[in-house]
Length: 248
Image (cartoon, rainbow, N blue to C red; front, side):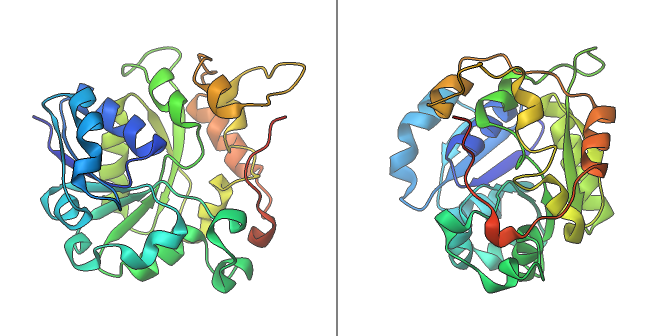
């Protein structure tokens, strides 16, 4: 057994990562804001390597924790249980959904730096925030596969980034380390590496139902050198203007 991955937030991104983790031999502990009993169906689908718990239990029992929740949930995170843990932040700031947060609207902090501020004794690494949920599994490939893709990661702790990269490698992904949490805006919404490169060719008529469409496509491999170029090409835009994706 590889180890135990805890999940705070078991929506589309959390479920996709958990599915790959179980296949890779990890135990996963899933949690959400509604209680472990609401995750019974997901646990059954994932199989014997998965179980449900409270967020505090998922954090306590895990070797590494994936947080995939809206920023509105940051005040409910189990701070003490997450102390000393490497925490993968898969979230993004969307003012339409999260409400306007002054420290983010002013670009004083990135959303991951804000999470690190809320979790002072944890080691936050930004990852899984720039890809559509269904493509996390669809584009995963074995090590050294010619069409293996990469995801960008950022963080302030080198050991934590190494731990996160090892997990992504086990799940079928290369990584591109692009620096600190202060630089994590480079993979945020509206940047070149955000979502679009992994989609492949869009229908000429646009996409009216993105969630349905993206589950039916194979995605387009994006190798590490391309990810690095896209990261370098990023220009910081005001976080306050970030909007939810619309491909119609």
